[in-house]
Amino acid sequence: MIEKDTMRSGPNTVNDKMFIAEIILKIRETEEHYKTLMFKESLRTGFFEYSNLFHQYRERAQVQSGLHWDLVHRYLTTQVLLLSPICPHISDYVWQNILNNERSILHASWPSTDEPDLSLTKASEYLAEASHCFRLRLKSHMTSGKGKKGETPTAPQPPSHGIGWVAKTFPKWQSIILTTMHDMYKKNKSLPDNKELSKALGSAPSLKKYMKKVMPFVQAVRERMDKFGESALKDTIEFDEHSILEENMDYLQATLDLEGIELKWTEECENERTQEEVMPGEPYLTFFNATCLQLELINPQPHTGLFQAILPVYENDNLAAILNIHEDNIS
Image (tube, rainbow, N blue to C red; front, side):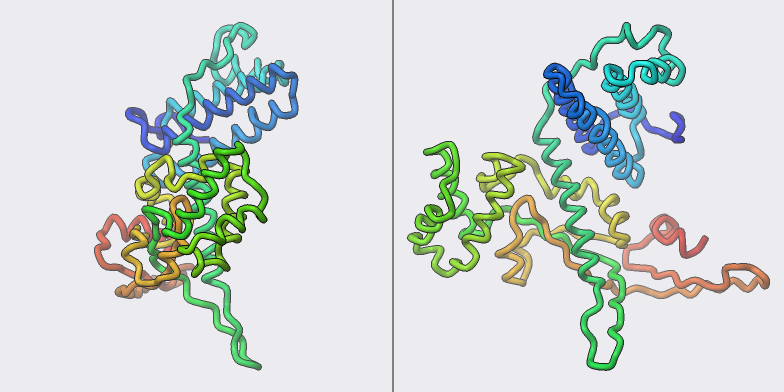
């Protein structure tokens, strides 16, 4: 149980703001479900998804600036209120005996909300999706390749650092596709079938070189539309993804167990494939092992469990970084 004294107060960070926008959205969705007597949906948005948002916030905040007490208290209070129509007795017990309210929850009002900032909710979804893709990318990187016949393949060495590639704009051929699809969507308020899209895109001279990639990209855009609607057809995104990744660098490094991640624009990349395939909203991560000084720490005291440990020290590491990042190695 995290105590109030261990939490911070004061101004909200970007993570705090994303969490606030998300819980506001879930409160509103839950209220609509109750109004239409859709109790199963109310439980989904008002409990399962609501609690998942807090676990996500806690995971991100604990490796950065820490949990904000005002937000934790707001979450606990609203969570009980959202459940009170379904679980009145348990909610009332928590309301009075744990949250220390003098009157019954029956006298409490439904949580009031402002208009949610949807750009912040999309930024949070982006961060969750990016970290998930980065973990899959790391898993793929660590998968042993096929060795020679009769030999056991050696496992790759875990990487120490990563480079996150972020695209400012879509590659020109993708931008042409998005513009064409958006124009066709505006005419009918829906996308035509792939046959008609293929015909329209096939007549564009600038796409001749990329015809094998055109329809797979169209299908990917269709799938994004199922999640984001018409905004998936825009050639820009509604938030600064570079800033979102930068703000959450400690979280990304911790979840990937990396010493450091450097963010770069795709236009700086020498790999033409990376320049063509990385798009706004879908960053890419490459891994490498940085040069380091290997310190071998040996415990001369006999009859102890820890005999020695290897401590890598990287460029620009200071004492605080070494103690924090390599805590497990020297404990």
